[in-house]
Image (spheres, helix red, strand yellow):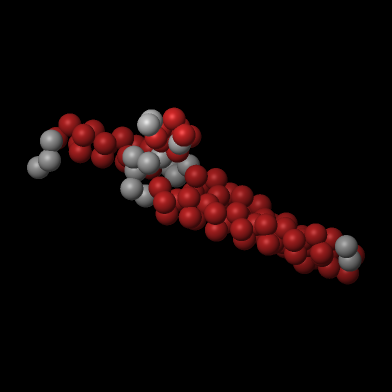
Length: 93
């Protein structure tokens, strides 16, 4: 019965409390990107929608940026390490 054997990929994420919201946000961005990708594919079939297709491509690029920022926030790693040291070493004050 070693639960971390089965979930070894997620083990490091389970320590932080904000993770479920991070995964939820990533999933939401992913779903939105998929839906917009379908719209892009339909627009690409008709040359009349060249301008709209370019706008959709920009939105897709922005969403990829958003997803990468959610996955690796700038300050999160520093904040998590600081919290872990304070809570883990303090004992419960």
